[in-house]
Each structure stands twice: as C-alpha cells, then as structure tokens.
Image (cartoon, rainbow, N blue to C red; front, side, top):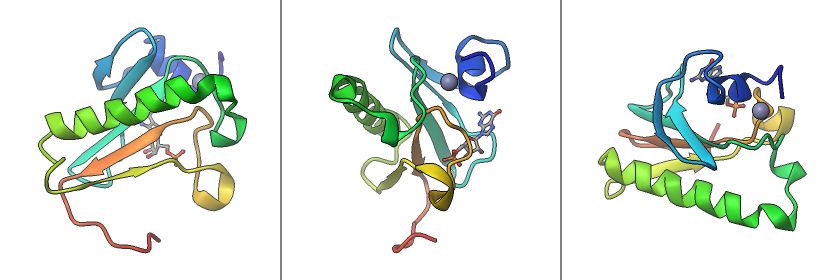
Length: 114
Ligand code: 5GP
Ligand code: ZN
C-alpha cells in the first residue's frame, strides 16, 4: 500500500529502527516509546486491523505473537513481564492502519489500561 506508513518502513522508503525481519514479519522500535522497550511487530503483508483478519491469517498472527515474545526475551523483559497490545479502530487509539502488535516492557504497567 503506497500511502501506508508501515508499508513504507518495510520498503525502506522511510527509515525505521528495525530490530528483526524475515520474509513475513518486520519489527522495529516505536518512534514515540511508551516504555523502555517499545517494539512494533508487523506483517509484511498489509492488513488494516484485527477487523480485517480471516482464517487464512491465523498463521501470521501466531507468528507475530511468538515473535513479540521472543523479542521481549531478547530485550530481557520476559521474566519481569511485558505488555502486548493490538489497538483496533478509533476508540482504542489505532492511528496506523497496518496491523501491529505493540510489545512494551521495562516498567510496571497498570490495569485496567487507560
Ligand atoms: P497505534 O496508535 O496505531 O496503535 O500505534 C501506532 C504507533 O506507531 C504509535 O505508537 C506511534 O508512536 C508509532 N509510529 C507512528 N509513526 C511512526 C514512525 O514513523 N516510525 C515508527 N517507528 N513508529 C511510528
Ligand atoms: Zn501497510
């Protein structure tokens, strides 16, 4: 998608601080981190949000979640604990409409979330 910010990061049209990539997934540091560790895990394939998922996407979503957990471990926050979030549409605060898993760690989080 030409006008999608995250597709442009994947295609190296704009810079991203990439921490992991393979042929299906890319992960990069959030530009406005909300915790000492704040990584976004995204599929290379453009999917707008959780609302657009089909059964054919089960594999990629599983890979995103497992990769998020692996990155948390690499960053040293898996034992202390980390927060994983998919924001979907306006009320949840989704601002970029290319599905992304937030992986946040390195501080204590409250519940319920804001
Ligand atoms: P959302 O609000 O859609 O769940 O999350 C979008 C995230 O993308 C936000 O946390 C925001 O800081 C991050 N973001 C927005 N623009 C950029 C950018 O150009 N580069 C990076 N690395 N992150 C961005
Ligand atoms: Zn996209």
